[in-house]
Length: 113
Length: 116
Image (cartoon, rainbow over all chains, first blue to last red; front, side):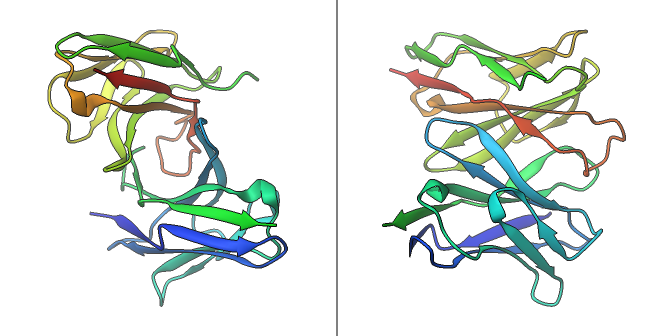
C-alpha cells in the first residue's frame, strides 16, 4: 500500500528564510503526489501535485516541490517565507486506481517576524 | 464557481445519538469523498461516491455510512455516536471525468463534530 511520511511535525522559520518541508513516499508503482495546506478552522487547499509530467512542480503562493525517485522524496520548498504561510501542510499520495488520498501526519509551519 | 460547501459547520451531540452531515460538491463534479480529521489519527479516508455508488471505502465501522444523490450532493451519517467520533469531517469533490488519480480533489471547510 502506498504511504507518505512527513519528517518534522513542527517547523519554525524566520520571515524571509527558506521553507523546506519534507515528505518521503512509499510506493511500488509510480505515485501521484500532492501537497495541501490547511489554515486554522478551514479545509484543505491544494498547493501542487505531481502526476509524472515533470519532476519539478510549481504550485501556488510561490511553493514548489521536486520529485526525486532515487530518494523517494517530494519535499516542498519556498525561497522566502511570509507570515501568511503559517499553516499546517500535508503531503498525500493517491491510492492506486482510486480517488482515495492517503495523507501524512502533517507539518505545522510557524513563521517568526 | 462556488466551492464545496458543507453544512452544518459545527455540531454538538451526545453519545448514542446519530448525526447527518451534508456536502454539496462543485458544480459538475461527480465524485465526492469524505475524510475524518483528528489530532491523534490525522486525516483518514472514510468513503467515496461516484454517480450515486460507493466506489471506495476506508477502514471505519459500519456506524459510518453515506450516500450520494442524483445531483451529486452527498450525506454521511454516523449512528450511535461515541466520544471518539469527535472530529473535523471534510468533504472533497472532483470531476472524476477519467476516474483517474490526476483529478484534483477540492475540499470544503469541514463540519466540526463534538460528541459529549
